[in-house]
Length: 106
Image 1 (cartoon, one colour):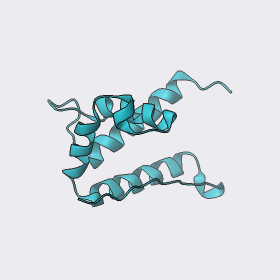
Image 2 (cartoon, one colour):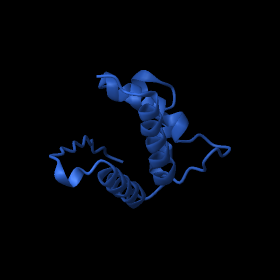
Image 3 (cartoon, one colour):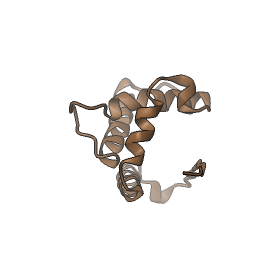
Image 4 (cartoon, one colour):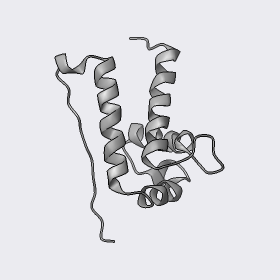
């Protein structure tokens, strides 16, 4: 199956938007953004490993996540799922969502 470059672009743009909004990062601002973070996150997901293993931005990503309330991330996740659900008519399909979380002592 061949995937068009337009579809890849839309997928990356959706991911950029999700990260920017959930972490309150300014679009094309003076700080790092979803555009910068997504490369390491995607590489770690493909390799099934930690961010620290694939790049040098893990500390920045973890710091950005810690600086916002979890409700931001949940809200943007739900908004993104709703948007994609409508676009791809997911109400009529079987969909599996998987989550991986690790609790750490803070």
